[in-house]
Structures are given as structure tokens and as C-alpha cells.
Image 1 (spheres, rainbow, N blue to C red):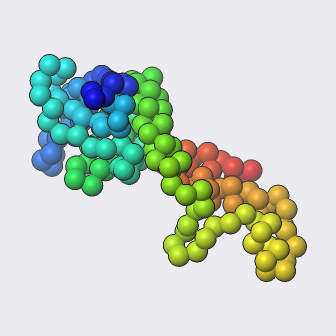
Image 2: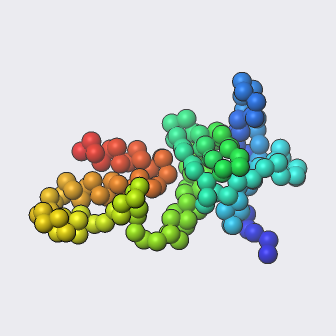
Length: 158
């Protein structure tokens, strides 16, 4: 079955060799989570990565998306802020799907991350209330893409 194109368009992609800058490439994100690129819409695909399995870091300020798929790394720069927002949202949708498919329990290192009331009750310690809830909520957000971590930093600042 052919996959449906979720999003497509031009982005700047860092060239493979050092100090060569960016090249304008045509990217296509399909419904199965494959992000591929070519020189133009009609050229053959040069490389692709699976977004649900990739590590993605994003900088809205610089309009960059760094996508590490294990076998390939794409360092991309969007042509406009609107393009960045669209690509980041489309990529995030696939990452969130990957996280929803995992077990609902979060594991940090070798320790199970449970709710603050359960942890406090098990230890015989009264719940600390709002501050501890904020810490656990922030820890849960650490599994989200880098662009969302700015929100966590803002919440800790309050």
C-alpha cells in the first residue's frame, strides 16, 4: 500500500562535508513516518529516516530541525518561521504516536516514575502538594521534543 504524503516542501539541508553550508532540498513526510529528501520534487529520493524512531531537536529561533534517524542525520533549516512551525508540528505528531504506543509507565534509568502521591504514600511521607506535582509534570514533559522543553523551563521560572 502506498503511503500518503502528509507534508512536503523545500528546506535547506546541511551538506554532508564540513564547511559546505546548506543546499535547498525537497522534503516529503509520508503517513508511515518516513521523511525523505531529493534535489527537487521529480528527482529520485536521496535518503530517508523514520521520524517515529528518530531523535529530533528543534530551534524555533534559528528555524532549525536536527533529525537523527540512526542511519542518517538531517540538519535542516526552514525557509520561514511558518514553515518551521508546520514541519515541527508534523514531526511532533509522529513522535507523540510513538510515545503513545509504548507502555504508559515511564521508566527513568532503571527506576519506575510513578505519581507523586503513590511515591509519597509508599514512603510514608505526606505529599508535598503543588511543588512536587510540578516536578513530576516537568519530568513527564522531558520525553517531548526539544522545542517543548522551553515551556518546561518557563514553568520552573514561575
